[in-house]
Length: 66
Picture 1 (cartoon, rainbow, N blue to C red):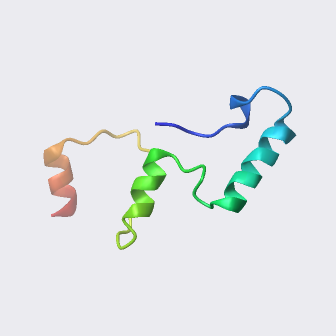
Picture 2 (cartoon, helix red, strand yellow; picture 1 turned 90 degrees about the vertical axis):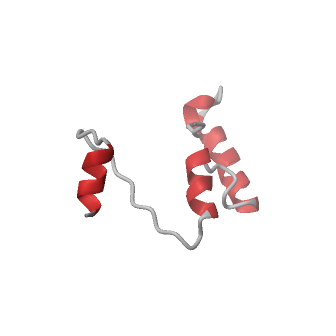
């Protein structure tokens, strides 16, 4: 999965932030990651995501929504 970070660019952080600002002014989704594009394309769907220390298997997921 791609992501944007100011450390991805050589040089000053201000220069990288200026480039990023210019990119999103022309196209608001210019710096979206693949996952953000996935969520954006499903405009009629709401996704809730969160990090968890608990792992889930199929049975646990089925039990959660039952």
